[in-house]
Image: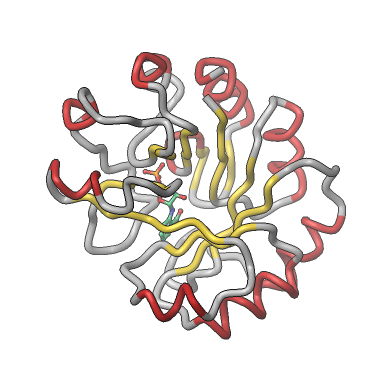
Length: 194
Ligand SMILES: O=C(O)c1ccccc1N[C@@H]1O[C@H](COP(=O)(O)O)[C@@H](O)[C@H]1O
C-alpha cells in the first residue's frame, strides 16, 4: 500500500518519512488543529523536498479561493478537502484535489465510489484524532480507490493489506507529541504497510 504521513511541521520529519519510503506528506492548513502549519512555513519545507513526492495540503471549511491560493503559494501538489464541501467548490478548484468521506456508518464508505477518495472516521472535531473505522465495513467493497485513514498505527496497518486499499494515511499513530513525528514509528508504519 502507498503511504501518506500527515501532520508534518518540520523538514526533519518530512525527510524521515521520505527516506523511509513515504509516497505523500500532509500539511495541515486548519488553524484549530494542533498540527497546524502556516503556508509560509510549509512553503519553506516543500521547497527543499526531493521530486516525485506528493505534497498534500489539508483544508477544513475553507473556500475554493483559499484552497487554490494556499496550494499555489506553498507548492502543494494536492488538496485534501477534509470536510463536506458542496460540488460547486470542486468546480472552482484549479489544483488537483482528493475528497474526504468522514464515515459514520457502513453505507457512507460507498460515497464517490467511482473516484479516488480518502475515508476517515467521523469525529466532531475533524480528524487527526486516532479514531478508528469499523474495518468489517470494507470486507465486500472494492477498496482499490480508497485511501484509508483513522486510528492507523505501525501495529494495525499490516492487517489491512488483504483489503487492497490504494493507500493508507496516518497522523497521530506515528507521533511523539502533537506535530512531532516519532521517527521509529514512521519507519515501522511504512515498512509494515508496504
Ligand atoms: O491531523 C490533523 O490534525 C487533522 C486535522 C483536521 C482534519 C484532519 C486531520 N488529519 C487527518 O485525519 C486523518 C486521521 O488521522 P489519525 O491518523 O487518526 O490521527 C488523516 O487523514 C489525517 O490526514
